Image (cartoon, rainbow, N blue to C red; front, top):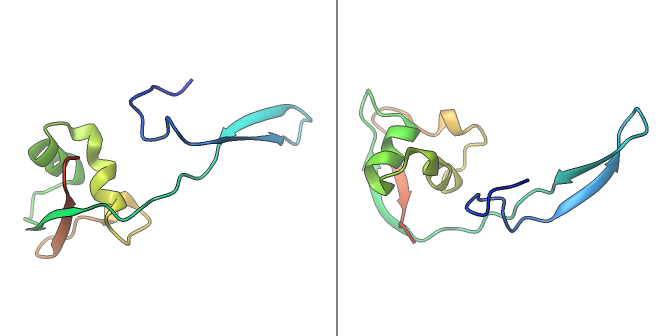
Length: 91
């Protein structure tokens, strides 16, 4: 069950048949729309995506908002020291 506050709460599910013949319900890919950008943050040497989320959103688990605004596929590659990082608005 997906928590109603999750970013996947309104994402559709799909049914698949696993190799063992069992039917499984999976969360489909969620659509990522371009979020409104509030600012650009220059990443420092000790910044991490979760600590930036805590600073800008008061909640480290909202790191995915910053990751969604990036072109990187791996959320841990989003933060590179000295680079400008897009920080979406908190809406």
